Image (cartoon, rainbow, N blue to C red; front, side, top):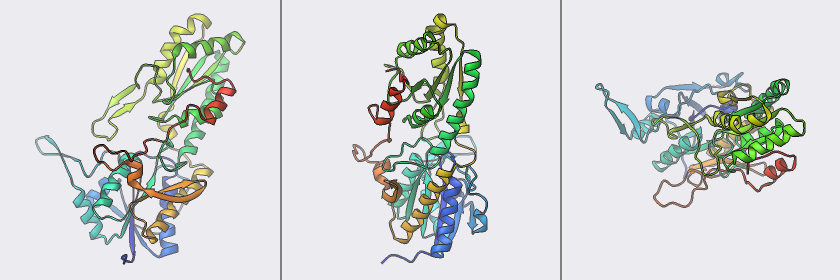
Length: 379
């Protein structure tokens, strides 16, 4: 027989995005109003769980946060408690499994279930905590919209709005100066942001990780536009876009993070390539803008406020139903769930269960629609 739930906890891990506060609000309000649970928030993601940095939450603590981007609980993407970076007084670095410390902190607070909001790395640790007996519920978080098993993640639509608005703004400068303007957006492994944002923002070229581009085909497309009287062009480029036979562009390496390679710079690479291929023919200047963290922040839009609320409320319903070790999903507009290990893998050598990132279908309706209206993918 399952233990009666009296108190739950929540934390946010990984990178921030719009909708996190809306999820927190939904978890706290559903827990208190529907089930009478107490709620503890750990501050700073897994780091707060390790250091026992917490906040006893009530209805007042989530008042006025619905529209805000970011997270009132703060977050960290450097703290894997199963392989935690320790530095001694001499500056020597070692890695230890400190997960038992976190579990003891949960016991000190009489926490019966833990809601963990995060992406791939955060949910991998959620899986590992579940294996050690913690009653875990996962909620997927990424603006890249690439989490398998769920059709859309909160924050994605708000990020799309920022991309569309940025492309709209670039159009005026591109038109005024007869320039080729590039907007580099996020999307490590999946091109959803560049694809939908580019379509909405009237891009003429969209480059995504799923379709390797040929710079000569991109150049020929832009030259053809110029020759028929369109003396300005817009490109929307995923940070994970790759040339045919090439590799992703890495801006920096941070070995303290799960994804040690920090992508970035593909916009500048494409701009330089176009200066060699297009400018000698058309005389156009080529400029790149990297949108960066603007995509993550700002006021949460209508769609994401509602979606976040559904994710948060359903997570608490799952706790009440004893459905632990699972991640909240949405499919066909219905809230459901899957085992976390089906999303992030089992962690075992030779595993075949992990679905991998949910990527754009190069032959799907969305890509074909874009091509129908004249958008080039450089393929």
